[in-house]
Length: 316
Ligand code: SF4
Ligand code: MG
Image 1 (cartoon, rainbow, N blue to C red):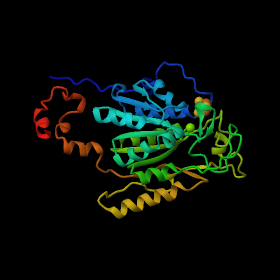
Image 2: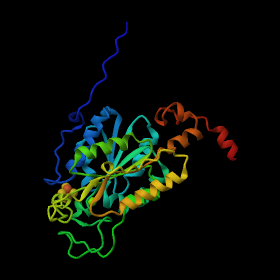
Image 3: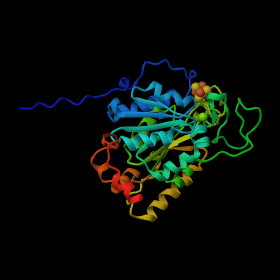
Image 4: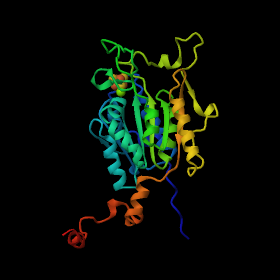
């Protein structure tokens, strides 16, 4: 009689590294880190099967604090590195993350092209409207006319709308979370990981050191006479961003249009899933073109000892 070994149940502590964390006290990045660790525990993912990639910025330190494989890459370059890792080893859950300056500024070209490519991975953006690591300059998400305490003058260029950009680029899962609601954020992150395709989670993140506009109190609406939150949850309003019939182009267009309209709501700001559609991924297309990839991951294929004579002959 064979006895099956019990499935190991991972807990949040299994994803915590013992490295010293040097984020400023009260930074919203702590909430995002907790949200990621809670999501990994919810999905019971083996830390040995998770790889977390980051760009440069305060958010770039996140992989150091997660017990899983990690790679702190270059400014704006997290998506191509994460894409390469995912395509080489499809057995690993790939999470890419970075800041708003990193991803929507220098990394904007990769941001757009990763959407249309639809590689199966989750991309989390710590969106605090400033370049925190370099002393709080205005980032691409700060609106025209705004001035944080780290800026000598108001911004004279407008901010971008990352949700609308993600819709246009072709991301198949688009959501927004809030760093100081890690439980709600964890649910969104778990869904972004479970989604088969390119997922963007734009996370509104407080930076108490440099951004005195979008603070915890501002999000709570402490300055408003009615003291109501400046955030609301899409799923509590009956909003349904999920495409139920992906063969119906009209439904896809209608759901994308609804997501863009929601993305322009300012006060209160919607959080939750704006749009989701299960469409063929880049990996699906690769497996069709190269059938051996359907049998094993590229990392398990001996690409160095192939007989290339016939190919070279054909090119002569
Ligand atoms: Fe967080 Fe801002 Fe400090 Fe960076 S500078 S660690 S984003 S509070
Ligand atoms: Mg930033």
